Image (cartoon, rainbow, N blue to C red; front, side):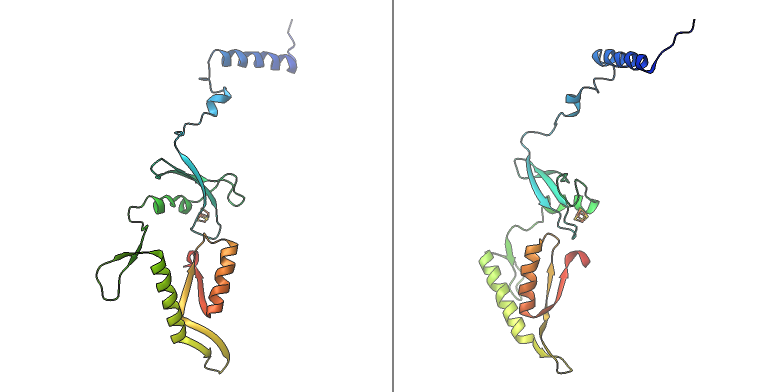
Length: 191
Ligand code: SF4
């Protein structure tokens, strides 16, 4: 006589077999959830959140650094609303900015006609920039164009922004630059 196996019987038998296989270690223990969740990262790694500086998408990344401050891993932030863990190869190249022996950490200044660079303070650098902006603006101010129209601008200074600037920083920058009379205002990702 031919035996009848119902769908319920089949599930009971196959479920029991899977349980036996898992209990005996067949599948190499891959069914154990704790084996999947093991965190292999060394405990001394520090997590820091940052924004990719390369384009206006502003993807969020998580940087992992060791005790010496070296960047040892970089990955898209899964909780970031823009990229949700993704990131392009250009973003992954951010590591080159950090792990770069040529990266400058101090202000260097080379005086006109000098051949050597000198270390200077940030106060020196900011005063020097402000002085040059003021002098260049005063020397190149354009009140009217060739048609006699009032333009109040300066063409001798340009400003390049960066993708890491947020909305509020861009707002303040544009207010300042337009007040100075600049018309050449660009973004680094468009160059
Ligand atoms: S360069 Fe790539 S990772 Fe960086 S903000 Fe643009 S899309 Fe995102």
